Length: 275
Image 1: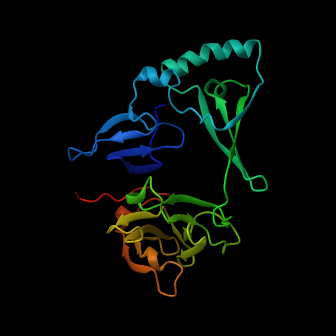
Image 2: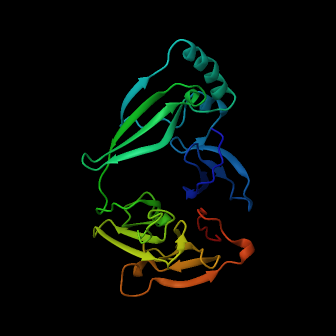
Image 3: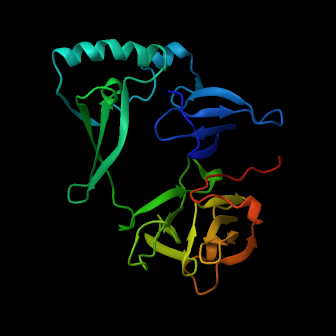
């Protein structure tokens, strides 16, 4: 599916991929010193997709390990309408046959994740044809607060990493207690520990971004954008992740961003070394 591909940026297996929750990743050319769009990239089969691959539903398929429970609520006229709309969506707009909806529920009592998809054509006609997926989940360090933008040291992607970092909220606000985020959380998967670092009052943060320095997993900087809404300023904050949760201050430095270059709230990005 064609999409804005503006939710995340990932350097993976020598490729630069731009991501979006509702569509396939797009590869960006970084070999020739510019950022031209190469095209849609099939992350599973690791090749560029042709239009017929997308039209035939060759991507965005849910893992067969998940249990599926389907239900159709159509019939008669709406079945006919769906038969007309479906080839248009698949053939012209290259939309996959199913759309995974951004509605999910974690059931902690049964350690399971429930999510749902709908048929692509059902977004345009008044009927519901949903498929429910049930997957098992495992509690992570007993962390229960709403959290987003999880990240690890990219040099350890695909290997046994020790720590996960993410953005969360300190729950110090009576209104909007869960968002925007104001805290970086560090989850140590080996020690099963949780550590946090927070900005000041009426300040928020964006997505944590890694800057690897050496060969060790925690030998890096962690960069976040701070939004000081009370004074209408934006800062680039550099943290030492080894010091998060210790008696020492994890803040390395804080750089004010010129006002005409202020990052928007929810800015996504990643660090790329010069080489």
